[in-house]
Length: 153
Image (tube, rainbow, N blue to C red; front, side, top):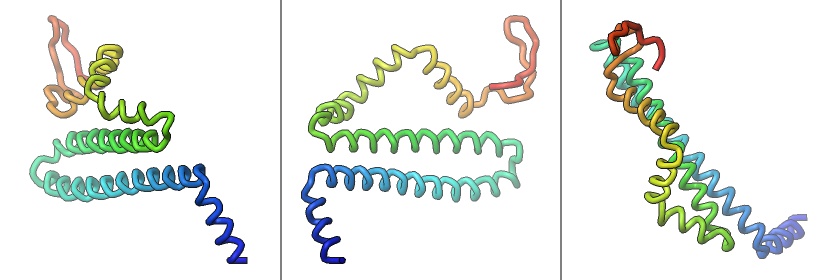
């Protein structure tokens, strides 16, 4: 029984498809492990900082949680993007595409930024507002001689 299994496994390992499946699984597992480690480190750091911050400035706790959430999502997106590029690099037919992603990431960022200017500007403005916090929820503001309350950012 084991002899047959090992024989079949050696035959499968000679096939190109099996090798690609194993490499893909390794890439996916590595990406998930990296994300879990980053999440664990950020959660640990967040708990430590928040307990200290609650004693000194309890009003700033929600702002810090928002910032850490944004950082966590950006890191997760970056890890998945790199995993996708590494996944593409294992196939000969799309290797030039994966290598092109690495080589032209800056230019692609500029092109995508120009193409989706309005959408990306709103996202980037939201990130800047959450980090710089010139206004907070519940603040009273006057804009162009109009008075109002900040209800949503």
